[in-house]
Image (cartoon, rainbow, N blue to C red; front, side, top):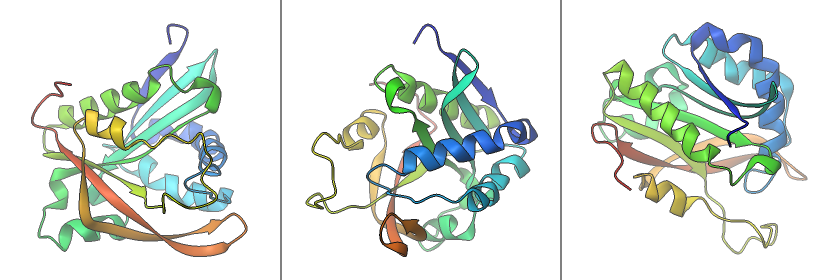
Amino acid sequence: MTTMDVRRLSGRAIAPYLDTLAALRIAVFREWPYLYDGDRDYEREYLAAYIASPDSVCVLALDEGRVVGASTGLPLSDDQAAFQRPFLDRGEDVSRVFYFGESVLLPAYRGLGLGHAFFDHREAHARALGRFDFAAFCAVDRDPDDPRRPPEHRDNAAFWAKRGYARREGMTVHLEWNEIDRGDISHALTFWTRSLREERTA
């Protein structure tokens, strides 16, 4: 961890890294549980929202100048309507929610504390903006008995819970992506949220 360079960028400053972020997302999300057969054009379109939002954040992990991990976030009101819908359906104010997009990290760099660093930086960024009550992200729902699940796979639920996040049952978004060997199909992703008004104690 001491040799790693962790940088926090926002808005237009993310633009020079667009292709690097796209390639990293495609590589990492090809793994379980997403099994995403990635597309560069879609990635550029998806990441454009982070460049367009002046209050977005992108945390980069670099090893000797090479990007080996990244984590993103932006105001939920600046993201796609599909991500806002579960909150609007419950009468929650999306302008008070800061949405965390993804944390992607190459396998060789996992277990070094970068996952916590990604959350620390994004939470600090959202708090510094001063107008958000909650941080939120969503994660794909998979059957724990799915035969494609690698035996060594470790679920992130315990990690997220220790960070103070709680799964919001019923707050689900449905997204379509090209899954390996299955084509374009719809996937359910459930939200996790935590208050930004209190510092994490655990």
